[in-house]
Length: 167
Image (cartoon, rainbow, N blue to C red; front, top):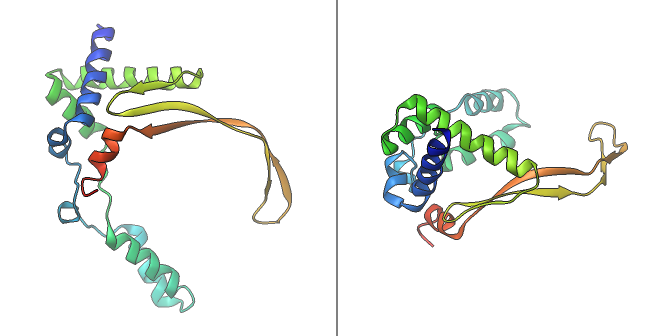
């Protein structure tokens, strides 16, 4: 049962990323005209702080200008599960289980050092970061940063083209 759900979830994930009409149906906006612009609490806080301090006026105006240019719309897990259930014909509970299984497999396999390539979507892999010297920003003291591994995702050419339709 889980194998079938996993297969359906991966197929739905790949289908979502390869069909532009499907992506638009899920609320992923492409142009500035369809973006919802709502003031965030940080923008309001920055505006309030700018009126009280003259020195911070330049910084807060840059932040406010950046947030006015493009507001990012969040597509939360519950909405994603609902959309997945609608597209696959499964229940929301089954869709949630399938999504959890897909994410679990991706996290487990990538952390084990494997590379997961989903054609039309992208590649998940593990990057190595060598040990290096760093500085404590508060004290300026030099510190040793240990070597580590970091998971990464690189989008496929198809996905990048969908994200940039004007190019």
